[in-house]
Image (cartoon, rainbow, N blue to C red; front, side, top):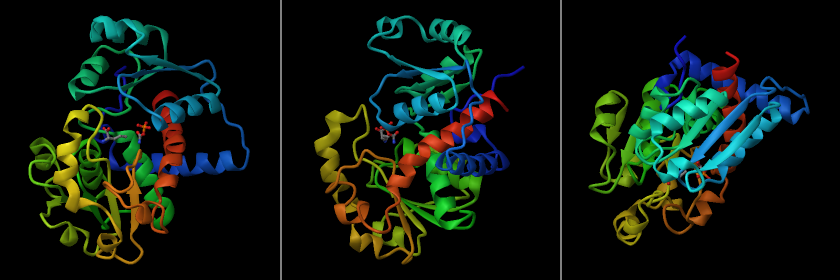
Length: 301
Ligand code: CP
Ligand code: NVA
C-alpha cells in the first residue's frame, strides 16, 4: 500500500480538499457542542521542529489529545537529527514506531527525502517552499465566512514566500484568481508560477492588485531563516504594507487574513489586523479543526 503524505496542497485533489474543509467545519461544531470523538486512540504523531512554532505545535498537539492519541515534540536541537543522523535513517526509525510524522524544516527537498523513507504519512508543518496546513485553515475560514471561494479574487501582498506559493496552489486547486504583488526580486519561484499560471497574475502596483478583491492576505516580510535580511526587507517592502488605504481598494466586504505571527506597523497596520475585516483569529483557531480533519483523513480514511 502506498503511503499518503501531505507535503504540498497538490497532494489532495479538489474533491478531497472540499470534503476536508466540510469535515473541519463539522469537527469544529462537534467540539463547540462538547461532543467527544476519539478516533486516534493509541496513535502517536511525532512532530519534528527545526524552526520555532506556536500555532503549529499547539494545534497538532491539541488535535491528538482531543482525538485520544498523543503527540511527541521533537526539536532538532535535542535529537540525533540535529547531530548529523541522516534524514533517511531518522525517517525509517521514527516511522517504525509512530503512526504519523509532522515536519517543520528549511529546504523542501528535506521533507521530500524524509517522506520517501517514511512508512507512515508525513505532514508538512512548513518548509521554505510551502505551508499547506495553513492554507487549509485559510480556506476553511473563507468558506465559513463567505462560502465557496471558486471564482473569487484573492490578493497576495508582500513576499513571494512559502505562504504565497501555497496560495498559488490553492488558487489552481479551488479555482480562484490570485493577484500577487511583491517588490521586485521577491517574487515566488518560477516553478510555482509555471505550475499555476492559469490562475495567477503578477501585478506591480499594490493598489491595482487589491482592486475588486474578495480577500487580502499577507505575511511577515522576513521569514524564519531570513533574519539577517530583515533590515533590508523592511526598506524594500515598505509600500506593500496592508493598511486602511489599501483595504479600501478591495471590495467593501473583503476579508483580511494573516497566518501569524504578525508585525503591526510592518506588513500590516494595527487598524487592519485588529479591525472588522480581519479574520486572522478564526484563521489561527481553524488550524486545530482542519488539522484534525487532515489527521482523520490520513490515519482513519
Ligand atoms: N502560522 C503558523 O504556522 O504559526 P506558527 O509558526 O506559530 O506555527
Ligand atoms: N513565512 C513565514 C510563515 C510563518 C508561519 C515563515 O516561513 O517564517
